[in-house]
Length: 358
Image (cartoon, rainbow, N blue to C red; front, side, top):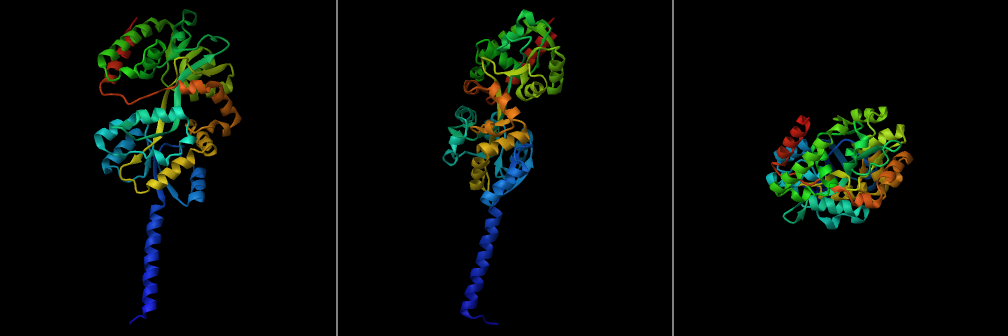
């Protein structure tokens, strides 16, 4: 049956409107590839209430993120959260990310030294691929009643603490001792001969220090038990583990070493074929607001790079954080850069020799 012209035009406009609405609805979903606790349900609800954008959360880890994005050439997700030392190597090999448009980031919400560290460690061919989000450190756990003089990693080797200290036999310990001995292992990453020289010096120190070590801890629970029993009175430790013990034993404090805490950071990175780039930037700027950042800290257990995010966490968590990290200690953090091929094999041989030494 023939439709009048006005009816035909109305049908066309309605049909076009439906198609546009469907397209808009599809674009208003942010597919987030992240870690557990980084996108709490309440935060997702608040984001949708403010922007109208749904967030589809897929929890993952570094290896899975690379695998998923590699399999699709950077498709399937709109925003990912790899650790900052796992971005450039994956990008160079698989081309799965696109550069960050820094003009779309509200940098005023981010701790400057953390932003600069992430930009440096995620830069490839002059382009930045990551913005910092959640972070954590290796530092010192110190029983202040029994070892108040421990201020840096080398202090763990003082004779008066014989048989009373602990650290892991893992690469962070090698790096920490190098910094404490006045060397910069990260600056030597691209010079294997220089890096081996640093490792040789650290190896000698760790062998010399063996008599001080009660045990090489392998997990946070094991370390916490050593601190609780006071079998260990000072250790290289994770901040979260130490703060947990502090809640039970106030005399055990997390201490930022004078040579700098070692830190990891999980970032925001854009998959190469993101379909909701504007939504991704909106999410980044939303969750870096101090009050929202505090909600993520409570859910994930670690702090974020948001300025003043510590002001809105629970009083107990805020106190241990502020007692541990002054502004100067934050700026002195040593952020893990990408590890060049071959270095971990070199480090493994050093750790084997230290453990075998009498």
